[in-house]
Amino acid sequence: MRTSNWMVLVLLVLTITAVAQQSAPATQTAQPAAASEPISAQPAPPLAQAPPTTMDQVVDRFIERENDLIKMLAPRTPVVETYLQNLTQDTTLGPVPKDDRYFLGRMDLSESIDRSDYLKDKDEGMEKHLLGGFTKMFKFQYTPLGFSWMVYADRNDFDRQHYDFRYVRREFLGDVRTLVFDVTPKKDAGRGRFLGRIWVEDQDFNIVRLNGTYTRPSRNSYYFHMDSWRLNLIPGYWVPTYIYSEEGDFTAGAKNKIAFKAQTRMWGYNLKNSTANDELTQIRVDSVKDETPAAQDASPLAAQREWQQQAEDNVLERLERSGLLAPEGDLDKILQTVVNNLQITNNIELPRPVRTRVLITSPLETFSVGNTIVISRGLIDVLPDEASLAAVLAHELAHIVLGHNLGSQYAFNDRMLFSDEATYQNLGFKHIPEEEASADKKAIEMLKNSPYAQKLDTAGLFIKALQTRAPQLTALLQAHLGNNIADQGMVTRLSQLATSAPALDWNKLDQIAALPLGGRVKLNPWDNRVEMVKAQPVAITSARDKMPFEVTPFFPRLTRYGANAPNGGAAPATTASSANAPSTTN
Ligand SMILES: [Zn+2]
Image 1 (cartoon, helix red, strand yellow):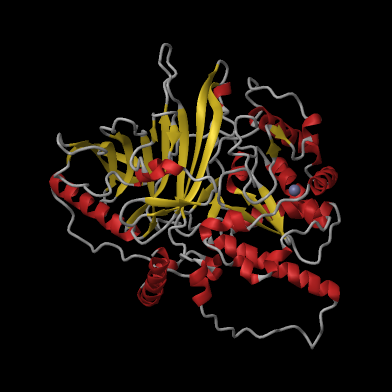
Image 2 (tube, protein in one colour):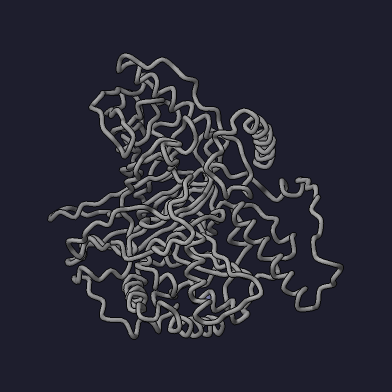
């Protein structure tokens, strides 16, 4: 049943693409590097209407726009990731993570909201408590669906029959002027209705932010509070992107039943859906000629390299199609600059240049396939500076230099035919412990010859900070494709760096060993492009401001699609030569 839906969608996408290419070439601007990306369906923006003259008309307009958004997103299945930290009180640092949970799946936004997970251990009772956060029956149990549900105020009944809307004021969110409304469900509106505040932009009257909770949970369920943000990534629509949830009360005498904070991110709205079936029916016309000079046969070594390259290409293409890998972009150039620095100072010459790519997910991991180093967004986020970035990249570069090539089995194309949700079961790049140890050794050797040699203290501090949190953050440290950085609460990767580093001191305000999640990499959830965040450093005034590896609320700077230098992730934030890659901007 699902398969036929996917296929219908593919046809639809092709049809709309043709139209979009003819009628709206302007909407695809500012994406110079997008050549390899398939151009896909962009919904038509809303028709221009006369501006509303009363608040009642404004309400009608945003109700209409919300329903248009629900319709536009119905055929899409974005990737949705929820990362949650349960909290406990620490006398110095305040609420700190006690343990953590991680969910990753594809969300089906059609009839109701449904999701299928990438991770093996599925939550069995998921359907039972469709709407809520978790049940109280035996123990608190989070359901990933509960988080995904918060993309809309009300999927089915967002209207005047079920809600009262009260205008509050005007307010700027970033560059966007909004009208703020309080939303309350009518008396007999039933369970699970939204209660809170919405922000509506003042041009097309789309909802750009929702903040509140849902009312009247059933006996054994509970609704989270949420702060849900949308970005204007295509003309006329604001797409759900971030949801922050938080529960807990640490005031004296509070019952302190439950305390957690969680970030939910959605991306891959424009992913082409693909299943093994869809793959097999795809017809490819190959018109590319072999341009190899003269007629040369491959030597055995050349054939071996060709084979590895084929495996590398297959894997990268497949990961990108699953929505897990960002397309090549400017952030890769920053990472490659760091790798280059290591290579040049160590006189490392390889038959092919080393490339880097960004895995979009939060868990801290790296791996390499062929000559490509892959590093997760979450790991880039928490690294304190360029030297620590160099350290984690050096480990993978060492694998490449030492010829620890994994993944040549993926040169067989049958191994690429699996559903997106089965990616983690079908791909894996874990080295044996001996290769891990020799890669670490080689990495330290290379770092000592590099421009980062004098700055390895922060890299060591990073490992130390990771060690203090490793027992609690098992989900964040669970690698899904590469080797774990820590095992059973002990950091294994590059642990030698910690021995020469200074003592970790939370109260030393100028010592930044690790950053919170979400501080470095900005993702465009429509086309999955990533770029560096341009954030002003904020002064740290207490140990509690450091929040290493922690989840924090979202506060994206809202801009309109195509506003001046197109933002919303479309414009490159940094230039290729940028030397201010991750620096100590804190
Ligand atoms: Zn390794």
